[in-house]
Image (tube, rainbow, N blue to C red; front, top):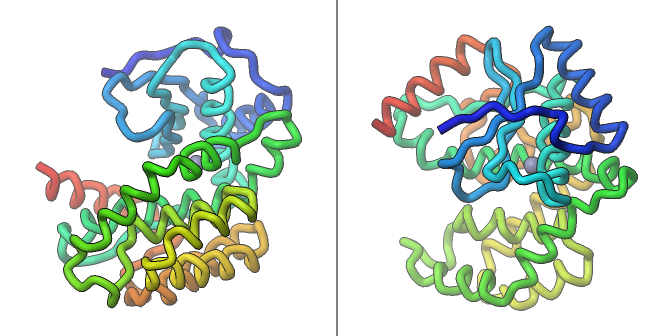
Amino acid sequence: MLQDLSWDAYVLPAEALLWRADVERASGLPVRLLRDDEMSGAEGEAWSEPGLRAVVLAEALPSDATTMTIVHELGHLKLETEGWPHCYLCHEDPRWIDWHYALISDLVSLIEHQSFFPTMLRMGLDPYAASEADLADPDVLDELRNLAPSLPLPGLKPDWAITMQLLRALLECRPETAEMILRDAAQLGPEVRMARALAAIIHAAPCTPQGFSAAMRACWDAMGFADETLCVGEEEETAEASRLDMSAAGA
Ligand SMILES: [Zn+2]
């Protein structure tokens, strides 16, 4: 269930308040702060839909972790006001869209983080700490290794969930931590090679809307997907249609 929260209950860095003001000015909409008690697998989400801008939290208790989550999600919303395009999957089979939904949202997030995580560091928040803590946990790597033998064609095609974890290590952990994680994952050859290739593309991309679009296209190509299955910066009507497709597939 969704519950409206008051911004007044949370103390945010001054620059984060400017991000919120930018989003409100650009969209003409108040940014709502919501709690979704059914959210799983994330601390927060940024919602941007026709008529709605919202930061959505899994947990409403004011704390340093909650502040971090709010600023993080405001960072995603702020990029849109600077012209960063939405990305969608375009495919005639709604099941294909369903299967690749997590992959594209992970990839978009990881690239977007490149442009606002350094600003969060300057605000005195460390957005990299969460990835360090999550990925340095030996259980995470064991989980990745255990996944590998269950793949339909082990060793041939990279598993995207594993690849995204390794990419997150390369982009959001200290270089020493990332190298340790990739060394430990060495038997996951295709995943390690793909994560390194994607990280190189993303590191080389300028932190601009054009750089983002080009990096998304280049990553999609490197992963071997057909160009027309990735739609960047389409009309909102198209987004609505693909979302409807996805919910129809889920129902
Ligand atoms: Zn994010």
